[in-house]
Image 1: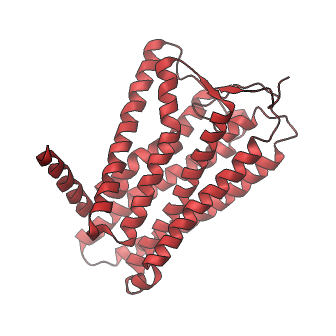
Image 2: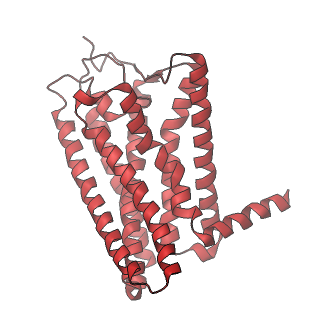
Length: 310
């Protein structure tokens, strides 16, 4: 029987045993990672460099892109290195660091998505009060609250999880350090406190999700009253992808943390975690930005300007 004081490293789940499949996974993750880096970096640059985008909506979008870069950079590079060099090891403190930063970024991102739904609600349903309710100071406070919530949540869960005695070895059924997989290694009577914390966090997350859904329902009701069919199509084509990505993010995340052990399997764990940890940062540039004509035009001008300089 081992305990946490004697564990110096964890073994992550291998994607495949065959070398050819490991390299295939490496190239797949590399492509996704580069796409996420490029898309989010272009958005950050376009918004930061163009004063026309210094508005609440684009301020929140810039924060979202920074969080996307942080969350995908916490998990994917390590998964790529594991596949490339066929090395599943991650140190005990490396695992703790990965857990902290991953929770920090995804919690802050989810809080920010909630704020962004409120921003769209006010812009569409209460446009006359937009300047009052979403002034520059209010926007900074909302963004700071999202980042602060992420930090507090990550600190609580990481400190609590890595203070547990581990009695079930050091093999994790996941491609990155994930709290539910670490709890499986904990001594049976010692993880109740962390389980309670997870349930509380999930309940708060569900409350945010309800707020997002209600906000979009109000937005859709307002959009349906728009006399222009083109205006309705533009609003729906923007809002529906947002809601789809948020729904995927929260449902797969909640399933990963609340699913019973009886339906757990390595392949299911990989699939679910991939959908809430890798897919949103990669597709957010498309759903939140590339459908925005003004932002697409700014990015196109930025790229063409870079080409002319070279």
